[in-house]
Each structure stands twice: as C-alpha cells, then as structure tokens.
Length: 197
Ligand SMILES: C[S@@+](CC[C@H](N)C(=O)[O-])C[C@H]1O[C@@H](n2cnc3c(N)ncnc32)[C@H](O)[C@@H]1O
Image 1 (cartoon, rainbow, N blue to C red):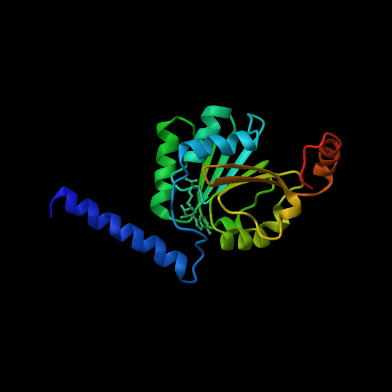
Image 2 (cartoon, protein in one colour; image 1 turned 90 degrees about the vertical axis):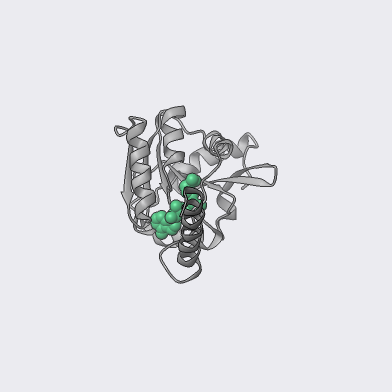
C-alpha cells in the first residue's frame, strides 16, 4: 500500500475508533475534534485567562488549548485525556514548546479529576458529556471557577451563564461556579449591569 493509501486507511480507522467509543457506553464523552485556533483565542479572551490562572482542559486532545493559554497568557495548565495516543501527543507537544514547567498532562478519565486547583475549566465535549462530567466533578468544583465551553452548553446551569460569544454560528459559553467567592463579584457585576443572572 502506498503512503496515500495508508493515510486514508489510518484516517478511517481513527474515525471508526473514536465514534465507536462515543456511541457505545464507554467513559468517552466526546470524539476527538481539535478546537480551531480562532476559537481558542475567543475562549481565552472570554474567560479573561491570565498568568494567575490554572486552566484545566478536560479532554485535552493534543494539548493545543493549554499550550495557547501558556504561550499567549502565561497560564499554568493541566490536561486530562483518556486516549493514550492523544495524551502522548499532548505531552510531546508540550515538550516541543518547552512548557513542561507550566503544563501537566494526565492520561486519565476527566470525570475522576480533582479540579479543586482550577480557576478555569476549558471544555469541548458534548451536551451529554458536560452533563455527566459536572455531576461527577461537583465535590471538587470551587466557587468562582470559570468554565468556558465551546459549542456545548451545560444543561441545568443557565443561571450560572455569565456571557455568550456567538460568531459565525459558533458559540462559546462562559459560566461561573456559584458560591461564596463568586457572590461578591456577581453583586458588583449586577450593579454594573454586566451579568445575565
Ligand atoms: C472534541 S475533543 C477536544 C480536544 C481539545 N480539548 C481541543 O479543544 O482541541 C474531546 C476530547 O475529549 C477526550 N475525552 C472524551 N471523554 C473523555 C474522558 N472521560 N476523560 C478524558 N478525556 C476524554 C477525547 O478523547 C477527545 O480528545
């Protein structure tokens, strides 16, 4: 088989593997689709990510969101990825960019993550995935944590939706985990008319 043939067969196998995982009951919340750079830029902007932040990408793929957050904003990052090859690719991309001091990749199930250190959660999963994930993560979610989700909303979290950035039918949603830390900010924002609550 020539190189082109191998590439096509490899691509088909990859698509099949990811869809089988998603459609049948597995721990996978989503198939792999990388977030385009322009959307990553919008996510980081909407969540106002800065060097003070620790960004968790739950289902980090090849690590591109965390790498952009570190390079563009100086943020630290932690990525969870179930797929072994993608987790390895993410680790290798972090090494190539010399960002090991800022980014840690964990090969594992995002629903088991301890997100108590996170100030920002970045998501590109699915409606079903978001729903399940937040049920599992509840115990370690900290009040005030910003959640930025590309394309998919979080069912039942409407009250915690802070802003939506919609362009070209591609929406990015910003939520904040309610609680004591966010209440003070929320009341300031309400006074300034900046919130949807
Ligand atoms: C749509 S892709 C997004 C990848 C990356 N966040 C990005 O924006 O480029 C979803 C990723 O989540 C991973 N994933 C799905 N379920 C997961 C789970 N339970 N734990 C960890 N990773 C998961 C998939 O393997 C896939 O890489």
